[in-house]
Amino acid sequence: MQIYNSQSRKKEELVPVHPGKVGIYACGPTVYNYFHIGNARPFIVFDVLRRYLTHRGFDVTFVQNFTDIDDKMIKRANEEGITVKELGDRFIAEYYKDAGALGIRPATVHPRATEHMAQIIELVSTLIEKGYAYEVNGDVYFDTAKFPGYGKLSGQNLEDLEAGARIDVEDVKHNPGDFARWKAQKPGEPAWESPWGMGRPGWHIECSAMSRTYLGDTFDIHTGGKDLLFPHHENEIAQSECATGKPYVKYWMHNGFINIDNEKMSKSAGNFFTVRDILKEFDAEDIRMFMLSAHYRSPINFSRDMVAQAHASLSRLYTARDHLQFLLSHAAEQPMSAEEEAFAARISDYAARFDAAMDDDMNTADALGALFEIVRDANVTLNEKSGKAVLQNVLDTLISLCDVLGLLMKKAENGLPADIQQLADDRVTARKEKNWKRSDELRDQLKALGYTVEDTAQGQKVNKAL
RNA sequence: GGCGCCAUAGCCAAGUGGUAAGGCGAAGGUCUGCAAAAUCUUUAUUCUCCAGUUCGAAUCUGGAUGGCGCCUCCA
Image 1 (cartoon, rainbow, N blue to C red):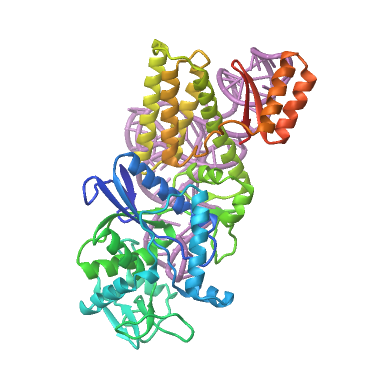
Image 2 (image 1 turned 180 degrees about the vertical axis):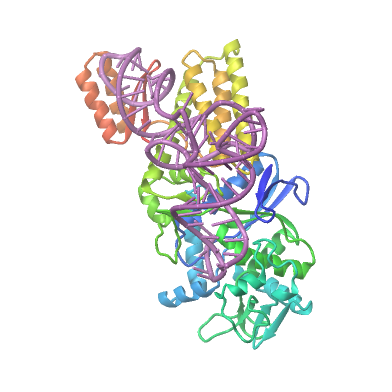
């Protein structure tokens, strides 16, 4: 698989540190609020990365942290009159609800910053011992001038950054770009004991400490939003490589933003939609489809109209699957005909095209194209005369490829509720009697109750509306 | 000021040197008691614009225009 590495700015062949295994660290949410649709993008696209690598036979360890201590957490907890811990517990639970709805699988490990103080303190101590960090009045700073590789990820250099004049110049820092690794306690803030007194970790350090704990000094893939590239990921590299003396990450993957009217969506800008709210209007899978319809590195515009398009698009997949299952339930056991053999061969070609697209830096839009080719070919080629074997074959392929994308996760309903079944049966009777008025009334009733009715060669088909 | 990204049909979106995938929408046809679903046909002689390289460019180079991001908490 080729992966676009943000650091080299090129696509590179994925060669894991340990053959057959892939370690991924994904920057997770700061749990001070429900997550918004913009936060959902990395969760979804990198969930797909994990699913795809698993599909390709890799043993994947996926680590996604919860940032449960920082300025925003403290501020929000104070506003709510609860502790930072209570706030974190609450929104971690809410995270699992929304992520679950979106089909985002729980990570192998979901470490919390506050539960890794020992590892964080150890890392900061190491940095001080090695001379890469220094303490001033209970604060510890990383000395950016001591790390020659500083800027290798973002392409920034310290001089230009200083010229940017957006960094507060604090006298205590050796260099303007130095960043806090440990912050001395301020009144009213939660704090942990450390060699430098009571305090809490700065940003960046938790990810270095937790990734090392679960994935080792050097691991394969680190993911996150483009905005994390600098300074967060740059700083992770600096502190991790200085502490271990080893390369930190082999491949950096960064997703593009979700925009509203071409402007970045963010909590701070206030122009965001929470997943919780969108889920009241749309199905979670529609959101997934929307996210996967473009390449993960491209910016995409969010709007209700776009999700509606994604819904229509996804419906085609569901309709095809349900129709194939319907055909299968009526099909006969028979050897594959020459035509069916040829069709099955084309299906493998589409599946190969799907993998090729995914192999190319996870091109989900292209992969979806292959999926729709399967659907069209199946619709054209297969019918009530098709045998069980070929139907099962294409259905298995379709479902397993969709599973890689986390689509088609809703199972077809097994049987109908009694009242619906009664209406359906009545309609069959009405149609036998050619009582079209009655049968149309029943179809309208079923539609009003959320069920679609189709008359096929094998009889009436009633499905819950998508 | 520094570092980057993007521009393809009514909408969304692949395609990175060989003659424009796919989805949505729209129009017409087939099928159907009527529908639905499906399917067929039509919907970009052309990829923001201008030069250049090449037998050949949406794809490479230079320039222009327009839009966006990071450098400050951020996915």
